[in-house]
Image 1 (cartoon, rainbow, N blue to C red):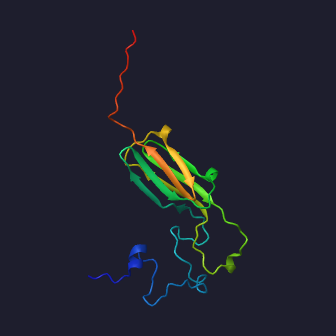
Image 2 (image 1 turned 90 degrees about the vertical axis):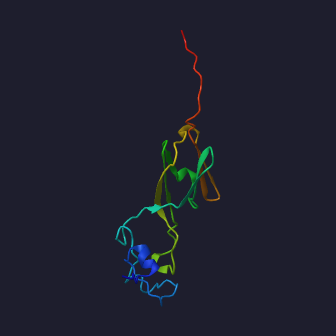
Image 3 (image 1 turned 45 degrees about the vertical axis):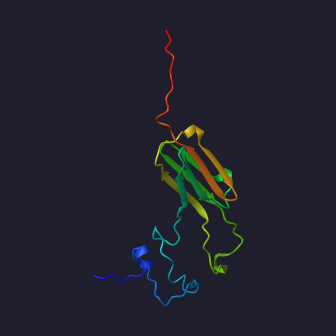
Length: 155
């Protein structure tokens, strides 16, 4: 049996119908009648955004990159364990524009977080976080499980 749903319907689970004749423009007039679907299902509920991340490795490190533009470094909370990283923060908006004066609004404002399970254990005490031009870069040194040391036996 052929699935006649559009790519967007398949992507969203079929909850939002997009006709092929629809243009790419946002229909501001019908937005209040047909609000966009949300994960929580409520239009006025406080939602927490999820950061997009790049995670890759070198032979000795795991690197995580994410965009945190508009967030002060002191407003970021980065928690690291040997096998997991959680990044939390909040992007505050200036409330100088009334909601009804917007024609188009895509930027995310509010709380966000992301938890990443690491593919290898890391040295928590040696991790480094740098924010530059809105890009947060976490450098997480991998634990060298083959590293050996010699202990002197005390008598």
